[in-house]
Length: 183
Image (cartoon, rainbow, N blue to C red; front, side, top):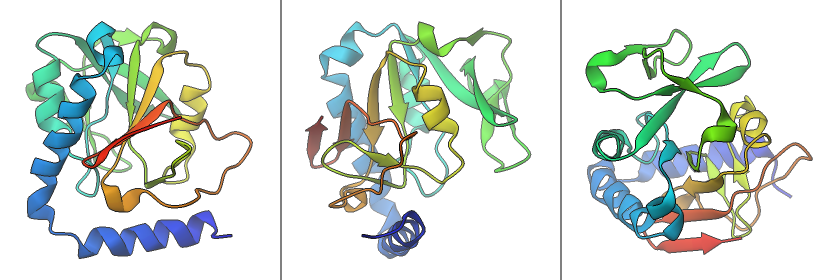
């Protein structure tokens, strides 16, 4: 069985081999599929993420969705994530650890008030298991959530088996440019 460290390294190599010029178009295709789901249509509050350079691109989608739904982004606070409303790129600042832009709004929400969660990850499998970067931020947060949990990934991030620990939280679905995987 592949270890999480080995799998993270393998996906990193695959990411570096990709043509990143295609990532915006591919990311748009992923989010177009999400917008067609009942879970998205019913959701009034969404937790998304502000993508880093090696993730499914969310910037355009977050800005678009925030015009018709309450969109929240995670803010790192110690070992946990705070959920802060996205109110436009002019109200964002880089956080000190990863340099990710984070919202500066005072409008915060508890995870129990989120209808839909869009989750990044390093790798996913066909059982909707997710492997993140190893800090456990999302697993701690998702363990408290009853929201629909959707992982977003490029097709090359889908693997046969993601190593799973007892604290890992499976998702309800994973969406790639090739389609939707349901649990």
